[in-house]
Length: 433
Ligand code: NAD
Ligand code: G6P
Ligand code: MN
Ligand code: MN
Image 1 (cartoon, rainbow, N blue to C red):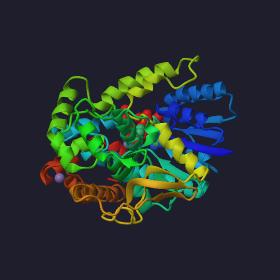
Image 2: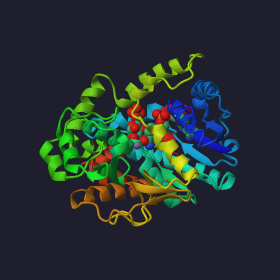
Image 3: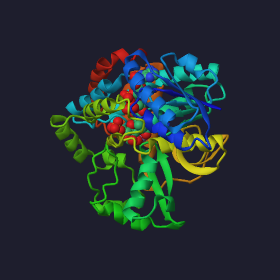
Image 4: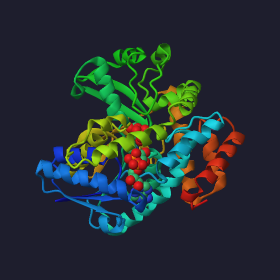
Protein backbone atom coordinates (compact mmCIF):
# COMPACT_ATOMS: atom_id res chain seq x y z
CA UNK A 1 0.00 0.00 0.00
CA UNK A 2 1.01 3.58 -0.62
CA UNK A 3 1.81 6.02 2.17
CA UNK A 4 1.07 9.69 1.51
CA UNK A 5 2.05 12.52 3.85
CA UNK A 6 0.40 15.91 3.40
CA UNK A 7 2.15 18.80 5.15
CA UNK A 8 -0.27 21.63 5.83
CA UNK A 9 -2.98 19.00 6.20
CA UNK A 10 -5.32 21.47 7.94
CA UNK A 11 -5.82 23.29 4.63
CA UNK A 12 -9.39 23.75 3.47
CA UNK A 13 -8.27 22.12 0.20
CA UNK A 14 -7.63 18.74 1.88
CA UNK A 15 -11.13 17.33 1.08
CA UNK A 16 -10.35 18.02 -2.57
CA UNK A 17 -7.24 15.87 -2.32
CA UNK A 18 -9.07 13.11 -0.43
CA UNK A 19 -11.81 13.08 -3.06
CA UNK A 20 -9.14 12.68 -5.75
CA UNK A 21 -7.55 9.73 -3.96
CA UNK A 22 -10.93 8.06 -3.42
CA UNK A 23 -11.82 8.43 -7.12
CA UNK A 24 -8.56 6.81 -8.18
CA UNK A 25 -8.36 4.11 -5.52
CA UNK A 26 -8.44 1.20 -7.99
CA UNK A 27 -5.29 2.41 -9.70
CA UNK A 28 -3.74 4.13 -6.72
CA UNK A 29 -4.27 1.99 -3.61
CA UNK A 30 -3.45 4.30 -0.74
CA UNK A 31 -3.09 2.56 2.58
CA UNK A 32 -2.12 5.52 4.79
CA UNK A 33 -2.75 9.25 4.52
CA UNK A 34 -0.96 11.32 7.15
CA UNK A 35 -2.15 14.90 7.58
CA UNK A 36 0.52 17.01 9.29
CA UNK A 37 0.11 20.50 10.71
CA UNK A 38 1.53 22.80 13.41
CA UNK A 39 -0.05 23.82 16.74
CA UNK A 40 -1.62 26.95 15.19
CA UNK A 41 -3.37 24.70 12.70
CA UNK A 42 -4.50 22.02 15.15
CA UNK A 43 -8.15 23.07 15.18
CA UNK A 44 -8.40 23.15 11.39
CA UNK A 45 -6.53 19.85 11.19
CA UNK A 46 -9.00 18.18 13.55
CA UNK A 47 -12.04 19.45 11.65
CA UNK A 48 -10.79 18.68 8.16
CA UNK A 49 -9.21 15.41 9.30
CA UNK A 50 -12.53 14.21 10.73
CA UNK A 51 -14.19 15.05 7.41
CA UNK A 52 -11.46 13.16 5.54
CA UNK A 53 -12.13 10.11 7.73
CA UNK A 54 -15.87 10.32 7.03
CA UNK A 55 -15.22 10.59 3.29
CA UNK A 56 -13.03 7.48 3.26
CA UNK A 57 -15.50 5.57 5.42
CA UNK A 58 -18.43 6.52 3.20
CA UNK A 59 -16.45 5.29 0.18
CA UNK A 60 -15.85 2.02 2.05
CA UNK A 61 -12.11 2.11 1.42
CA UNK A 62 -9.37 0.79 3.72
CA UNK A 63 -7.42 4.08 3.77
CA UNK A 64 -6.15 4.97 7.24
CA UNK A 65 -6.23 8.70 7.90
CA UNK A 66 -3.76 9.88 10.58
CA UNK A 67 -3.64 13.39 12.05
CA UNK A 68 -0.45 14.61 13.68
CA UNK A 69 1.67 17.59 14.62
CA UNK A 70 4.76 15.38 14.52
CA UNK A 71 6.14 15.81 11.02
CA UNK A 72 9.06 13.48 11.50
CA UNK A 73 6.89 10.65 12.79
CA UNK A 74 4.62 11.07 9.80
CA UNK A 75 7.41 11.13 7.21
CA UNK A 76 8.92 7.77 8.13
CA UNK A 77 8.85 5.57 4.99
CA UNK A 78 6.48 7.82 3.05
CA UNK A 79 6.10 7.22 -0.69
CA UNK A 80 4.76 10.67 -1.57
CA UNK A 81 5.01 13.89 0.43
CA UNK A 82 2.65 16.65 -0.67
CA UNK A 83 3.15 20.13 0.74
CA UNK A 84 0.42 22.77 1.00
CA UNK A 85 1.40 24.93 3.96
CA UNK A 86 1.21 28.66 4.56
CA UNK A 87 3.92 30.08 6.82
CA UNK A 88 2.39 32.93 8.83
CA UNK A 89 -1.15 31.94 7.79
CA UNK A 90 -3.55 34.32 6.10
CA UNK A 91 -2.49 37.26 8.28
CA UNK A 92 0.91 37.17 6.59
CA UNK A 93 -0.75 36.98 3.18
CA UNK A 94 -2.87 40.02 3.98
CA UNK A 95 0.33 41.96 4.79
CA UNK A 96 1.89 40.80 1.52
CA UNK A 97 -1.14 42.15 -0.27
CA UNK A 98 -1.63 45.41 1.64
CA UNK A 99 1.84 46.81 2.28
CA UNK A 100 2.92 47.17 -1.40
CA UNK A 101 -0.33 49.01 -2.19
CA UNK A 102 0.81 51.89 0.06
CA UNK A 103 3.70 52.41 -2.36
CA UNK A 104 1.60 52.13 -5.51
CA UNK A 105 2.83 48.58 -6.20
CA UNK A 106 0.78 45.40 -6.88
CA UNK A 107 0.00 43.48 -3.69
CA UNK A 108 -0.31 39.79 -4.59
CA UNK A 109 0.67 36.59 -2.81
CA UNK A 110 2.84 35.12 -5.57
CA UNK A 111 3.85 38.16 -7.66
CA UNK A 112 5.90 41.26 -6.88
CA UNK A 113 6.87 42.04 -3.26
CA UNK A 114 4.26 39.63 -1.85
CA UNK A 115 5.68 36.74 -3.86
CA UNK A 116 9.18 37.63 -2.67
CA UNK A 117 8.13 37.63 0.98
CA UNK A 118 6.07 34.46 0.72
CA UNK A 119 9.23 32.89 -0.69
CA UNK A 120 11.45 34.30 2.08
CA UNK A 121 9.12 32.82 4.71
CA UNK A 122 8.56 29.49 2.97
CA UNK A 123 11.97 28.45 1.62
CA UNK A 124 13.66 27.87 5.01
CA UNK A 125 10.75 25.63 6.02
CA UNK A 126 10.74 23.59 2.80
CA UNK A 127 14.50 23.07 3.13
CA UNK A 128 13.97 21.71 6.66
CA UNK A 129 11.33 19.37 5.27
CA UNK A 130 13.83 18.27 2.59
CA UNK A 131 16.34 17.35 5.30
CA UNK A 132 13.70 15.27 7.06
CA UNK A 133 12.81 13.55 3.79
CA UNK A 134 16.46 12.76 3.12
CA UNK A 135 16.70 11.10 6.49
CA UNK A 136 13.30 9.47 6.91
CA UNK A 137 11.98 8.64 3.43
CA UNK A 138 14.80 9.17 0.92
CA UNK A 139 12.91 7.44 -1.90
CA UNK A 140 9.79 9.58 -1.57
CA UNK A 141 8.57 12.06 -4.17
CA UNK A 142 8.06 15.60 -2.91
CA UNK A 143 5.04 17.12 -4.62
CA UNK A 144 5.01 20.79 -3.72
CA UNK A 145 1.95 23.01 -4.01
CA UNK A 146 3.19 25.60 -1.54
CA UNK A 147 3.54 28.98 -3.18
CA UNK A 148 5.42 30.61 -4.70
CA UNK A 149 5.67 27.13 -6.24
CA UNK A 150 8.22 28.04 -8.94
CA UNK A 151 10.60 29.79 -6.54
CA UNK A 152 10.17 27.00 -3.99
CA UNK A 153 11.01 24.34 -6.60
CA UNK A 154 14.04 26.41 -7.67
CA UNK A 155 15.20 26.53 -4.04
CA UNK A 156 14.76 22.78 -3.53
CA UNK A 157 16.73 22.04 -6.71
CA UNK A 158 19.56 24.41 -5.76
CA UNK A 159 19.78 24.20 -2.00
CA UNK A 160 18.68 20.69 -0.97
CA UNK A 161 19.76 17.16 -1.80
CA UNK A 162 16.26 16.18 -2.88
CA UNK A 163 16.02 15.43 -6.60
CA UNK A 164 12.62 13.74 -6.61
CA UNK A 165 10.71 17.02 -6.42
CA UNK A 166 7.86 18.30 -8.58
CA UNK A 167 6.18 21.70 -8.24
CA UNK A 168 2.50 21.80 -9.08
CA UNK A 169 -0.05 24.42 -9.97
CA UNK A 170 -3.65 24.30 -11.12
CA UNK A 171 -3.27 27.23 -13.54
CA UNK A 172 -2.43 25.10 -16.62
CA UNK A 173 -5.40 22.75 -16.02
CA UNK A 174 -7.58 25.82 -15.42
CA UNK A 175 -6.43 27.32 -18.74
CA UNK A 176 -7.20 24.10 -20.58
CA UNK A 177 -10.67 23.93 -19.02
CA UNK A 178 -11.28 27.60 -19.80
CA UNK A 179 -10.24 27.11 -23.43
CA UNK A 180 -12.48 24.03 -23.78
CA UNK A 181 -15.39 26.01 -22.38
CA UNK A 182 -14.75 28.94 -24.71
CA UNK A 183 -14.60 26.55 -27.69
CA UNK A 184 -17.65 24.73 -26.30
CA UNK A 185 -15.99 21.31 -26.53
CA UNK A 186 -15.12 18.57 -24.06
CA UNK A 187 -11.80 19.28 -22.33
CA UNK A 188 -10.50 15.80 -23.21
CA UNK A 189 -10.24 16.97 -26.85
CA UNK A 190 -8.06 19.98 -26.01
CA UNK A 191 -4.27 19.84 -25.68
CA UNK A 192 -2.07 22.81 -24.86
CA UNK A 193 1.70 23.19 -25.28
CA UNK A 194 2.53 24.82 -21.94
CA UNK A 195 5.89 26.46 -21.33
CA UNK A 196 7.27 29.15 -19.05
CA UNK A 197 7.43 29.48 -15.30
CA UNK A 198 4.92 29.03 -12.50
CA UNK A 199 2.26 31.75 -12.67
CA UNK A 200 4.16 32.91 -15.79
CA UNK A 201 3.17 30.08 -18.11
CA UNK A 202 2.06 30.48 -21.73
CA UNK A 203 0.10 28.23 -24.03
CA UNK A 204 2.40 28.21 -27.06
CA UNK A 205 -0.09 26.25 -29.14
CA UNK A 206 -3.54 24.75 -28.65
CA UNK A 207 -4.95 21.70 -30.39
CA UNK A 208 -8.49 20.41 -30.79
CA UNK A 209 -8.41 16.71 -31.67
CA UNK A 210 -4.76 17.17 -32.59
CA UNK A 211 -5.27 20.09 -34.98
CA UNK A 212 -3.99 23.55 -34.05
CA UNK A 213 -6.74 26.03 -33.16
CA UNK A 214 -4.48 28.74 -31.79
CA UNK A 215 -6.01 31.63 -33.81
CA UNK A 216 -9.54 30.62 -32.74
CA UNK A 217 -8.43 30.53 -29.10
CA UNK A 218 -6.79 33.96 -29.41
CA UNK A 219 -10.09 35.31 -30.79
CA UNK A 220 -12.05 33.61 -28.01
CA UNK A 221 -9.79 35.23 -25.39
CA UNK A 222 -10.15 38.58 -27.08
CA UNK A 223 -13.90 38.38 -26.45
CA UNK A 224 -14.49 40.19 -23.14
CA UNK A 225 -17.23 37.73 -22.22
CA UNK A 226 -14.58 34.99 -21.86
CA UNK A 227 -12.64 36.16 -18.81
CA UNK A 228 -10.65 32.88 -18.63
CA UNK A 229 -9.29 33.62 -15.20
CA UNK A 230 -9.36 32.05 -11.75
CA UNK A 231 -11.45 32.96 -8.69
CA UNK A 232 -8.53 34.87 -7.17
CA UNK A 233 -7.60 37.04 -10.18
CA UNK A 234 -9.75 39.82 -11.58
CA UNK A 235 -10.82 38.95 -15.12
CA UNK A 236 -10.16 42.40 -16.64
CA UNK A 237 -10.52 42.02 -20.39
CA UNK A 238 -7.52 41.96 -22.70
CA UNK A 239 -6.84 44.44 -25.50
CA UNK A 240 -7.79 42.20 -28.45
CA UNK A 241 -5.09 43.52 -30.78
CA UNK A 242 -2.47 42.94 -28.08
CA UNK A 243 -3.48 39.27 -27.89
CA UNK A 244 -3.39 39.00 -31.67
CA UNK A 245 0.10 40.48 -31.66
CA UNK A 246 1.28 38.23 -28.80
CA UNK A 247 0.11 35.14 -30.68
CA UNK A 248 0.39 32.81 -27.66
CA UNK A 249 -2.00 32.29 -24.75
CA UNK A 250 -1.11 34.15 -21.54
CA UNK A 251 -2.20 32.91 -18.10
CA UNK A 252 -4.41 34.85 -15.70
CA UNK A 253 -1.42 36.13 -13.72
CA UNK A 254 0.01 37.82 -16.81
CA UNK A 255 -2.54 40.56 -16.22
CA UNK A 256 -0.29 41.83 -13.42
CA UNK A 257 2.50 42.37 -15.98
CA UNK A 258 0.63 43.50 -19.09
CA UNK A 259 -2.12 45.49 -17.31
CA UNK A 260 -0.25 46.62 -14.23
CA UNK A 261 -1.92 49.96 -13.59
CA UNK A 262 -5.44 48.69 -14.27
CA UNK A 263 -4.86 45.75 -11.92
CA UNK A 264 -3.42 48.07 -9.29
CA UNK A 265 -6.49 50.33 -9.53
CA UNK A 266 -8.74 47.26 -9.03
CA UNK A 267 -6.70 46.13 -6.04
CA UNK A 268 -6.81 49.56 -4.42
CA UNK A 269 -10.57 49.68 -4.88
CA UNK A 270 -11.01 46.14 -3.52
CA UNK A 271 -8.78 46.87 -0.51
CA UNK A 272 -11.10 49.78 0.39
CA UNK A 273 -14.34 47.88 -0.14
CA UNK A 274 -14.46 44.08 0.12
CA UNK A 275 -10.88 43.65 1.39
CA UNK A 276 -7.81 42.08 -0.19
CA UNK A 277 -7.97 38.48 -1.39
CA UNK A 278 -6.59 37.16 1.94
CA UNK A 279 -9.33 39.01 3.78
CA UNK A 280 -11.99 37.59 1.43
CA UNK A 281 -10.48 34.10 1.77
CA UNK A 282 -10.65 34.36 5.59
CA UNK A 283 -14.42 34.69 5.28
CA UNK A 284 -14.70 31.86 2.76
CA UNK A 285 -12.62 29.65 5.07
CA UNK A 286 -14.83 30.40 8.05
CA UNK A 287 -17.83 29.33 6.02
CA UNK A 288 -16.06 26.20 4.77
CA UNK A 289 -14.94 25.05 8.20
CA UNK A 290 -18.47 25.55 9.56
CA UNK A 291 -19.66 23.17 6.83
CA UNK A 292 -16.79 20.74 7.46
CA UNK A 293 -17.82 20.46 11.13
CA UNK A 294 -21.18 18.94 10.16
CA UNK A 295 -20.94 15.26 11.20
CA UNK A 296 -23.32 14.35 8.38
CA UNK A 297 -21.10 15.85 5.70
CA UNK A 298 -18.98 13.19 3.99
CA UNK A 299 -18.24 14.78 0.62
CA UNK A 300 -16.28 17.79 -0.61
CA UNK A 301 -18.81 20.65 -0.44
CA UNK A 302 -19.36 22.71 -3.62
CA UNK A 303 -18.58 25.93 -1.68
CA UNK A 304 -14.88 25.03 -1.99
CA UNK A 305 -15.19 26.33 -5.55
CA UNK A 306 -15.01 29.86 -4.12
CA UNK A 307 -11.29 29.28 -3.64
CA UNK A 308 -8.79 29.78 -6.47
CA UNK A 309 -7.56 26.19 -6.32
CA UNK A 310 -10.08 24.55 -8.69
CA UNK A 311 -8.73 21.28 -10.19
CA UNK A 312 -6.05 21.26 -7.49
CA UNK A 313 -6.72 17.61 -6.68
CA UNK A 314 -6.78 16.55 -10.31
CA UNK A 315 -3.32 18.05 -10.77
CA UNK A 316 -1.92 16.36 -7.65
CA UNK A 317 -3.66 13.00 -7.98
CA UNK A 318 -3.01 12.65 -11.72
CA UNK A 319 0.66 13.35 -11.14
CA UNK A 320 1.00 10.83 -8.30
CA UNK A 321 -1.01 8.28 -10.29
CA UNK A 322 1.22 8.65 -13.36
CA UNK A 323 4.43 8.39 -11.35
CA UNK A 324 3.15 5.37 -9.44
CA UNK A 325 1.81 3.60 -12.55
CA UNK A 326 4.48 4.84 -15.00
CA UNK A 327 1.69 6.15 -17.23
CA UNK A 328 3.86 8.27 -19.53
CA UNK A 329 1.08 10.75 -20.17
CA UNK A 330 1.72 14.46 -20.62
CA UNK A 331 1.23 16.88 -17.72
CA UNK A 332 2.48 20.43 -17.18
CA UNK A 333 4.60 20.55 -13.99
CA UNK A 334 7.48 22.48 -12.43
CA UNK A 335 10.69 20.56 -12.86
CA UNK A 336 14.38 20.94 -13.69
CA UNK A 337 14.57 22.46 -17.17
CA UNK A 338 17.25 20.12 -18.54
CA UNK A 339 17.40 22.10 -21.78
CA UNK A 340 13.67 21.98 -22.55
CA UNK A 341 13.39 25.77 -22.75
CA UNK A 342 16.49 27.01 -24.54
CA UNK A 343 16.61 30.47 -22.96
CA UNK A 344 16.58 29.17 -19.35
CA UNK A 345 19.49 27.48 -17.54
CA UNK A 346 19.38 23.68 -17.47
CA UNK A 347 19.42 23.55 -13.68
CA UNK A 348 16.56 25.98 -13.08
CA UNK A 349 12.93 25.10 -12.46
CA UNK A 350 10.49 25.69 -15.31
CA UNK A 351 6.80 24.93 -15.79
CA UNK A 352 6.52 22.87 -18.94
CA UNK A 353 4.71 19.88 -20.42
CA UNK A 354 6.41 16.68 -19.32
CA UNK A 355 6.03 12.98 -19.93
CA UNK A 356 5.31 11.58 -16.45
CA UNK A 357 7.17 8.34 -15.80
CA UNK A 358 8.03 6.31 -12.72
CA UNK A 359 11.38 8.11 -12.78
CA UNK A 360 9.53 11.40 -12.68
CA UNK A 361 8.72 14.12 -15.22
CA UNK A 362 10.69 14.22 -18.48
CA UNK A 363 10.34 17.75 -19.89
CA UNK A 364 9.41 17.99 -23.56
CA UNK A 365 11.79 20.23 -25.50
CA UNK A 366 10.22 23.45 -26.78
CA UNK A 367 13.34 25.26 -28.04
CA UNK A 368 13.34 29.01 -27.56
CA UNK A 369 10.31 30.88 -26.32
CA UNK A 370 8.89 33.48 -28.75
CA UNK A 371 11.03 36.60 -28.62
CA UNK A 372 8.16 38.72 -27.25
CA UNK A 373 7.84 36.69 -24.05
CA UNK A 374 11.39 35.37 -23.62
CA UNK A 375 12.71 38.44 -21.83
CA UNK A 376 9.94 38.62 -19.23
CA UNK A 377 10.29 34.91 -18.46
CA UNK A 378 14.05 35.28 -18.02
CA UNK A 379 13.58 38.34 -15.83
CA UNK A 380 11.19 36.47 -13.53
CA UNK A 381 13.60 33.55 -13.40
CA UNK A 382 16.39 35.95 -12.37
CA UNK A 383 14.07 37.34 -9.70
CA UNK A 384 13.26 33.83 -8.41
CA UNK A 385 16.91 32.84 -8.26
CA UNK A 386 18.06 35.97 -6.44
CA UNK A 387 15.06 35.70 -4.10
CA UNK A 388 15.84 32.06 -3.31
CA UNK A 389 19.45 33.00 -2.57
CA UNK A 390 18.26 35.78 -0.26
CA UNK A 391 15.91 33.35 1.50
CA UNK A 392 18.72 30.89 2.17
CA UNK A 393 21.42 33.38 3.15
CA UNK A 394 19.36 36.11 4.83
CA UNK A 395 21.45 38.61 2.86
CA UNK A 396 19.74 42.02 2.94
CA UNK A 397 21.41 43.27 -0.25
CA UNK A 398 20.25 40.22 -2.16
CA UNK A 399 16.70 40.70 -0.89
CA UNK A 400 16.81 44.31 -2.06
CA UNK A 401 18.21 43.18 -5.38
CA UNK A 402 15.39 40.66 -5.82
CA UNK A 403 12.79 43.29 -4.95
CA UNK A 404 14.29 45.84 -7.36
CA UNK A 405 14.67 43.55 -10.37
CA UNK A 406 11.07 42.44 -10.04
CA UNK A 407 9.26 44.05 -12.97
CA UNK A 408 6.34 45.14 -10.76
CA UNK A 409 8.60 47.30 -8.55
CA UNK A 410 9.53 50.57 -10.25
CA UNK A 411 12.70 51.82 -8.48
CA UNK A 412 15.46 50.82 -6.06
CA UNK A 413 14.30 53.45 -3.58
CA UNK A 414 10.70 52.24 -3.53
CA UNK A 415 12.01 48.68 -3.38
CA UNK A 416 13.97 49.53 -0.23
CA UNK A 417 11.02 51.22 1.44
CA UNK A 418 8.76 48.24 0.77
CA UNK A 419 11.49 45.78 1.78
CA UNK A 420 12.13 47.51 5.10
CA UNK A 421 8.47 47.73 6.01
CA UNK A 422 7.82 44.11 5.06
CA UNK A 423 10.93 42.77 6.84
CA UNK A 424 9.65 44.44 10.00
CA UNK A 425 6.04 43.27 9.51
CA UNK A 426 7.07 39.64 8.92
CA UNK A 427 10.08 39.42 11.26
CA UNK A 428 8.50 36.65 13.34
CA UNK A 429 8.67 34.36 10.27
CA UNK A 430 12.06 35.50 8.94
CA UNK A 431 14.64 34.16 11.40
CA UNK A 432 17.34 34.27 8.70
CA UNK A 433 17.28 38.11 8.52
P1 NAD B 1 -3.81 27.60 4.73
O1 NAD B 1 -3.68 28.98 5.21
O2 NAD B 1 -5.08 26.89 4.97
O3 NAD B 1 -2.59 26.75 5.27
C1 NAD B 1 -2.60 25.34 5.24
C2 NAD B 1 -2.07 24.81 6.54
O4 NAD B 1 -0.68 25.02 6.64
C3 NAD B 1 -2.68 25.48 7.78
O5 NAD B 1 -3.50 24.55 8.46
C4 NAD B 1 -1.46 25.91 8.58
O6 NAD B 1 -1.61 25.74 9.96
C5 NAD B 1 -0.39 25.03 8.00
N1 NAD B 1 1.00 25.43 8.25
C6 NAD B 1 1.53 26.67 8.36
N2 NAD B 1 2.84 26.60 8.57
C7 NAD B 1 3.17 25.28 8.58
C8 NAD B 1 4.37 24.56 8.76
N3 NAD B 1 5.53 25.18 8.99
N4 NAD B 1 4.33 23.21 8.70
C9 NAD B 1 3.17 22.56 8.49
N5 NAD B 1 2.00 23.20 8.32
C10 NAD B 1 2.00 24.54 8.37
O7 NAD B 1 -3.44 27.64 3.20
P2 NAD B 1 -4.17 27.18 1.86
O8 NAD B 1 -4.96 28.34 1.39
O9 NAD B 1 -4.78 25.88 2.01
O10 NAD B 1 -2.90 27.10 0.93
C11 NAD B 1 -1.79 26.31 1.33
C12 NAD B 1 -0.61 26.57 0.44
O11 NAD B 1 -0.85 26.03 -0.84
C13 NAD B 1 -0.29 28.04 0.23
O12 NAD B 1 1.09 28.20 0.18
C14 NAD B 1 -0.95 28.35 -1.09
O13 NAD B 1 -0.32 29.43 -1.73
C15 NAD B 1 -0.72 27.06 -1.81
N6 NAD B 1 -1.64 26.74 -2.91
C16 NAD B 1 -1.04 26.49 -4.09
C17 NAD B 1 -1.77 26.14 -5.19
C18 NAD B 1 -1.01 25.96 -6.45
O14 NAD B 1 -1.54 26.12 -7.52
N7 NAD B 1 0.30 25.64 -6.38
C19 NAD B 1 -3.18 26.03 -5.10
C20 NAD B 1 -3.77 26.26 -3.84
C21 NAD B 1 -2.98 26.60 -2.76
C1 G6P C 1 -4.68 29.67 -7.97
C2 G6P C 1 -3.19 29.50 -7.99
C3 G6P C 1 -2.71 29.06 -6.66
C4 G6P C 1 -3.17 30.02 -5.59
C5 G6P C 1 -4.68 30.12 -5.61
C6 G6P C 1 -5.16 31.18 -4.66
O1 G6P C 1 -5.28 28.44 -7.85
O2 G6P C 1 -2.76 28.58 -8.93
O3 G6P C 1 -1.31 28.98 -6.73
O4 G6P C 1 -2.75 29.56 -4.32
O5 G6P C 1 -5.13 30.44 -6.88
O6 G6P C 1 -6.50 30.96 -4.37
P1 G6P C 1 -7.14 31.68 -3.11
O7 G6P C 1 -8.53 31.16 -3.05
O8 G6P C 1 -6.30 31.31 -1.92
O9 G6P C 1 -7.06 33.14 -3.39
MN1 MN D 1 -0.61 28.14 -8.65
MN1 MN E 1 11.82 46.76 -10.99
